[in-house]
Amino acid sequence: MAYDRTLLTAEALQTFLTQHPGWKHEGGMIRRTYEAPTFLAGIAFVNKVAQAAEAADHHPDIDIRWRKVTLALVTHDAGGLTWRDTKLAEAADGLFAEVTASTPA
Image (cartoon, rainbow, N blue to C red; front, side, top):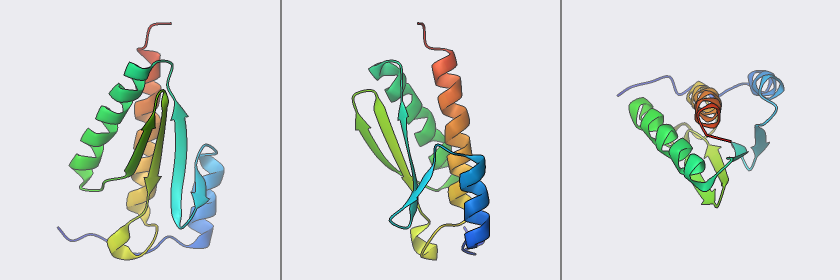
């Protein structure tokens, strides 16, 4: 599947980071750590991210440590960050909100 491999400009990246303060630019990737209320909520979040990533054919690095889930995104075949990374990051934020809203206190 062909897609736009245009790298984000420094300005576009900064705009994304300003609008999504949980995300950081580190090591050429955008990265965020989420802390779920329970281990199972964290796993539910990972499953939702996996489904969204598969549908987008764009797969993040995922690190799970008890209730903490870290996602790292970069478009490897484009050699850096593209709109695909920011779109999946935005989707992940929404999915985390869904999971935590449905987790019993």
